[in-house]
Amino acid sequence: MKIVVVAGGLSPERDVSLSSGSLIANALIDIGYEVCLVDLYTGVEILKSGGEYSYAVPEHEPDLDKLKQDANNGNALIGWSVIELCKSADLVFIGLHGDIGENGKLQAIFDAFGIIYTGTGYIGSLLAMDKDLAKAIMRQNNILTPDWEIIPRTLRETSNASEGDAPFFPCVVKPCGCGSSVGVSIVRNKAEYISALEYAKKYEEKIMVEKMIEGREFTVGVLDNQALPVIEIIPNEGFFDYKNKYQPDATLEVCPAEIDREFAEEMKDIALQVHNILRLGSYSRIDFIADSSGNIYCLEANTLPGMTPTSLLPREAAAIGITYSELCDKIVKMALRDKI
Image (cartoon, rainbow, N blue to C red; front, side, top):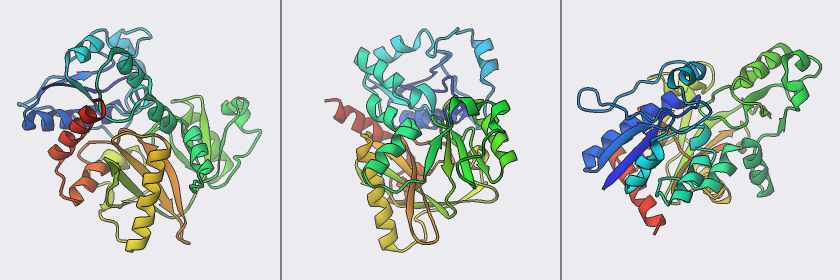
């Protein structure tokens, strides 16, 4: 079977994606598939180094302006040869994170060309990627999520931000459609709020301010409509930002989480509810924070969870005896099954 793994892309999460895509491609090759790894944005096939694919995530987000200058793609988000390459394959394994890979655009294009692909379809991708929309759907379905507001356009500019305080203190300021904690800041005062708006708008115009919930952070993977073991996330310092997510040994990840069984089952049930109401596909990861009173708040859903050496979904799968290669193979087979 011929599989194209698409990774990279014009996204602040492209480095994470290239790491995920490299490991996915290696695992599929080991299983026996014929694999090609390609950068979605540049259209360039990634070359192996020392007999296998490899990519280490830097500490900071990539310089997308420089990438656009180097690639000379104009306004195109997909390299000129990518669609034809994907059409020639039996299946496309989407190893992208953020932007076109998770907002439903690529899935809709693949559907239009009859290309079979892994993960969630375009509707679920759209619903989950827009944090404002996802949280509204959660709240309509009586799932606890922190209060939030979308910042009016007139206050997104730094010059105007000083005219009004954040709607909540402390709060979390974040771009509405990014993942991997890109553009995210924890804010406790007005000065930090102004800086946070400036940081967030580097990545997106639509900015969310969310009431900060103090507590323990957890995540639950969903695989083939089964909730995986709960994992607790404990950064060595700060919060679970871009650096702490992808640098080795920056975060302690306890799996299964050291919580009582009833609490774990409640969180897993909520994860399945979120997965289903957002119309997600064969796998996802749902993020939570629990306060000191035991209230479980859903933060967001991830339609293409990371598959890097530090990623959470592979850790959760391993806790129930599913190896990395087996996880990739299962994702492939679910995609083929669901397209029949």
